[in-house]
Image 1 (cartoon, rainbow, N blue to C red):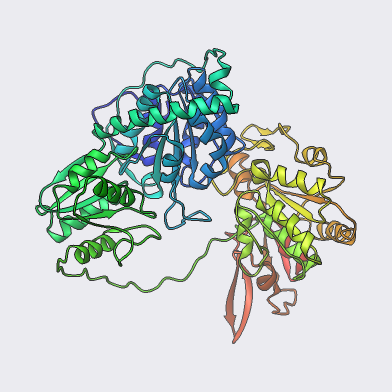
Image 2 (image 1 turned 180 degrees about the vertical axis):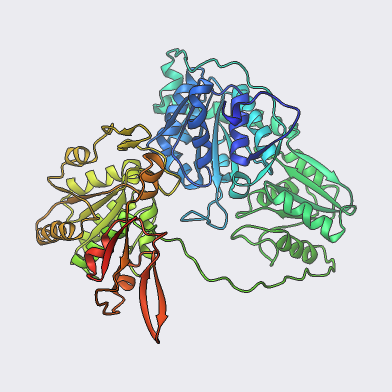
Amino acid sequence: MHELLIPQTSRPQFLLGNEAIVRGALESGVGFVAAYPGTPSSEIIDRFAQLGDEAGIYVEYSVNEKVSVEVCGAAAICGVKSLCAMKHVGLNVAADAFMSLAYVGVKAGMVIVVADDPSLHSSQNEQDSRYYAKLSGVPMLEPSTPQEAYRMTLEAFRISEKFGTPCLLRTTTRINHCRGPVEIGSIPPAKGFSGEFKKDPFNLVLIPAVGRKLRLVLLERTQRLLEESEGSPLNFISGKGDLGVITSGVSYLHVLDALIGMGLEDRTRVLKLGFTYPQPKALIAQFLGGVKKALVVEEVEPFIEEAAKICAQESKLLVDIAGKGKGLIPQAFELDSVKVKNAIGKFFSIDYEQPKVHQAPELPQRPPNLCPGCPHRATYYSVKKVFGEEAVYPTDIGCYTLGVLPPLKMADFLICMGSGVSTAAGFSKVLDRPVVAFIGDSTFFHAGIPGLVNAVSNDHRILLVILDNGTTAMTGHQPHPGVELTPKGRIEPKVSLEKLVRGCGVSRVARINPLQVKKSQAVLQDFKDKMNEPGVSVIISKSPCPLFEARIVKKRKKIVFRTDESKSCADCKKCLTELGCPAFFVESSGGVEHVFIDESLCSGCSVCSQICDSISPKRI
């Protein structure tokens, strides 16, 4: 039995925030789960994939977030409780479906988990997804701990079912990836995922006439949700005094830590909001009426601060409200108790002893890097050898984005998933330079296909290199439609990348194994020679992720590579300055620096031995 399926117990379970959400969904009777993985939300779909069969739940890794919302919405329309999860930028991808689904509504509970990433730990931007709730008229809950994540998942399904609307559960990295005690309940007997659809086109087909009618329904529903928010136990006031703090999410924990550390528990009232949209205006006004000053503590944007100021104005309350700006709560990056203490001290004019921060010795920098034996490194090396610095290299989101780092420096432009193909097309029309775009296999399925079709249709002169390592590697080796490696061995992929590319209208297509350096460069040179001709060329650079291969098919390395002392090394260090495999290291001997290979890190890919005669194989 999977650990998240254990029966109710009197002992709390020590769960990751994402696992607490899974457990809450299971206890709510969820029957349909879909997601595209994206940190910090990935563990939600991964855990469901592990336990889905045992729990009698349908689980799918959707091709992108928009699709996940659409399939889950259809299931919920048919009376099957559904859940989809994504990171904040994934909600951008899903927004088209999400905004219209808010009009149509659902027949069974549907929860959309959106995981924001303040401080950009693993994201290309810092975004506050709370505004999507306001934009769509969809209710939103915000937990502060794993226990609340569990509880609010249950509540989100209840609210969704009661009001016939999707419900947003907005988390942040510190909620998703922290562990804490969670008191669990019981899981109801599995109902399966069989539903029933009743035709109702004039409420379910969003032509303009239907949309106009449902717009009014949405506004009326939002008013009823406001009443629900006003009475929700997820919003509460604690403490006493004439100083006030309004907060939500993980910021609530920083506030508690700050107040205890400053000895202000008996002088400060705290309004903690868990049901954060619709914002409980009457409760906020009531709170503001009992304090002289109110500090709003929240991460990223002034979402609650704006609501508090509107409530004060509408209620004609003369209370000083502040949050962002004035050197108080920063608008960028995560908060911590020190930042909150500083803001509280400054805003409330309270002297307190600044904490002494002991500076530990600075650690050596260790930026993320492509793994030893990663086929992407070999691809980049060969492309750079053939196309050089003159070419422009738009790239995409995945492990291969790390090609931006020295010594490869093979990324010139990136904005979002799938942008590598489309931006390459734009560059090709305004530049008289070769344009070589990179995209991963999973990312291509996610968002690259429309860009490729557009490039073919408009005869854009680009070379697209699809880096096919057989998995969605960066988020934890989740499957995608083109996978071939499984725990049972090799399978025929559901969707062939090469056939798909040809089906998009590309005639110049080749497949290379990037670990075969000379052959790869010969193919690249041939394609370069033909880039004066209009149209799109595609090279599929295919070699499995070595970590995935070792994990899934238990492949063990039989050969490693080492610098051969019997062969003369010129100490040119091109292996470092051009390839830069993490298995290389430098040691000084007799005042001269020599490059060596750490055999424990070497994957045996053989790329280095193909570019340097002083490197030889060693059987292990």
